[in-house]
Length: 401
Image 1 (tube, rainbow, N blue to C red):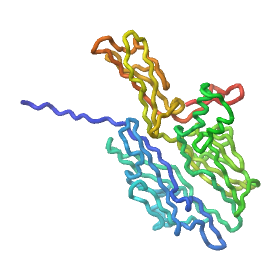
Image 2: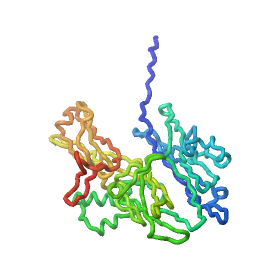
Image 3: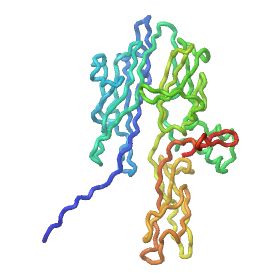
């Protein structure tokens, strides 16, 4: 008896994709402080009420081989930076912060340092996630979060927004997106009443209410609002309603079209006589939750039939998605004994021409596998020609995803 040469065969995994964002876990201790010079007090005082910031890491693999979407517990080589310098190298931060090392809040920083008036720190986190399937470390780096303090030696301006500083857009929850699709495809009659009923906190049309105060008094005039897209710690792009993700900028509200945003960081400035008196940052992230997609029909094919019809069944969060087409891209395929990977239509329905599928007439080849390759659609983009955006007769732009 002889033993053959050994050949090692491995599983092939798709690489991880990471979504990383900074999340403030202490609503009573935000990123911005106020210093009351007359009382020599900070509000909030981080010595008493520390600020906790979590670098939330969500991981997924396209092949479904990764079942731990919240990956903070796997973080290693964790470091926080202020203005590009590791906090461990800054003497003024020594003993005034700690980094969590346990569980789902691993990597979170607890800050007990007050930021003096005139100081500002752009914080970001860096670390790695160990992908044991591929035997490699994946680097993790967040965007920045600004820590500032306003000196309230006299009545000062402040800005707060009627939203979390991290806005998550999940198309599966968007009733307005579904209304638009139904109205555009003649499934319902369009009306303002129906559209208004579809507007809620999950809609792509997102209103961010602005509350500007001077001292303790709410004000709505005497100042201007400027909005910027944050590109990096040193680069911002001014935004107006000519940038189609922004549909309204007023002294009391900013309205966005979240369909056009994959991921974005934004900065709001309040200015009086051209001088900045208050600011606020927020971010927008498009969410990609796990879903399933299968052909609904398993009906047998009768002799003499020339086509096979089927429809996709998409499930998310334990429920069937009634109309998945606006959210999920679905491409139909068939395999048979004679042909594999035959591509058919894109959409939630298919018609397979049996004479082109390779299905046979004998016991050995009288079968056909029907399947769907599906992925959640990305953010919308503007349709353009060589010179300008495409618009309808009323000047409304066309978008697609």
